[in-house]
Amino acid sequence: MGFSKSGYEALGVPAEEHPADLRPIPWDQLGDIPAKRDNGDLILQICSDSVYINEHVLRRIEEELGDRLRVVWTVSGAQRYTTRAGRTSKEEGRALIGFLDGTSNLRPRNSKEDEKLVFVDSERVGEYPQLPQPGMPNPYGGGAEPIFPSDLQPPPARESKWTKQATYMVVRASLIDTPRWDREQMDSQEHIVGRFKVSGASLDLADDPEMLHQEPAFAGNPANERVSIAAHVRKTNPRGPGDEQRRVFRRGYPLVQATTDGLQRGIVFICFARTISTQFEFMTRAWTNNENFPRPGSGKDLLRSFETVLCGGYFFVPPLETRNRPWTWMVP
Image 1 (cartoon, rainbow, N blue to C red):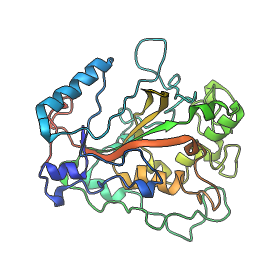
Image 2: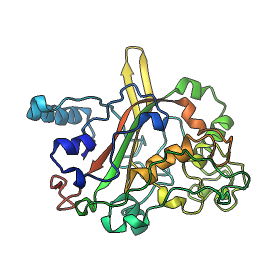
Image 3: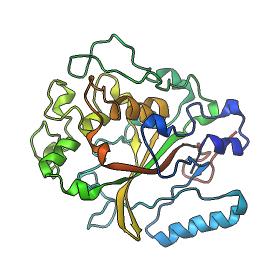
Image 4: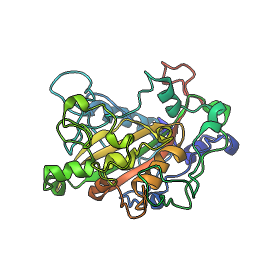
């Protein structure tokens, strides 16, 4: 559960105590035209092994809160599929486009450094990466330096003490034009994504499942462009100096919706991070959708041309008084 800026206002949290990096999702700046623009006040991520349970939980909340709550959008995702019982591993979790997904995700349970990128610590705000400055040498393969949007959101200067161990949550649900995607030859799909489809290895490495978790060759040699500079994996994680501080913890789900016209297919992208401005929003505006990154004329992320956005928003998941009791959330 998370609250948007208007949600914290509705809860009566004083403005000076609001999460500093929280605002309504800026669809126009992100380059998206969603079917539903409303950010909403409250986000609920309801997970179970049955749509009956999910529906029941939502209905009970609607009944309990009555006229104080109105659903403005909802999407339904599913866990990535495997024939074996239990959680789908990174080696098996494929998106609906057929590629392995989440292979370079953060691991906050296993890495203290990754945990720092997910949870807010009001005493470490000064460590956030700053906006790029012009005139620096291009670390992404030489040539002309990138051109960044002039209105990028600066990192927050402070966070209130109560936000420690809380996290920002971004949701962006989108459809994928799967008929058009399926008409692409496999080598074209691999060029768009930047990975081999079956093994999952980076295109600049050997096509071998053993190479799945190896760093791409362009990480050590940006001039190596066997992975296109506009490929999805390179646009979302270019691996330049300091870029590891902009990674997010992803918890996305394949989206399959039935309509009277057939099935809609896509992804419910969910991510968690210690900021929005230095992580998700920077990645989207400065890298993914920036035609002038990593150098002028590079083009946008090739995969984005297959997407149509449905809905989404910016939220802040409050900290817990007791970590293993999710109902003990706190606000001032």
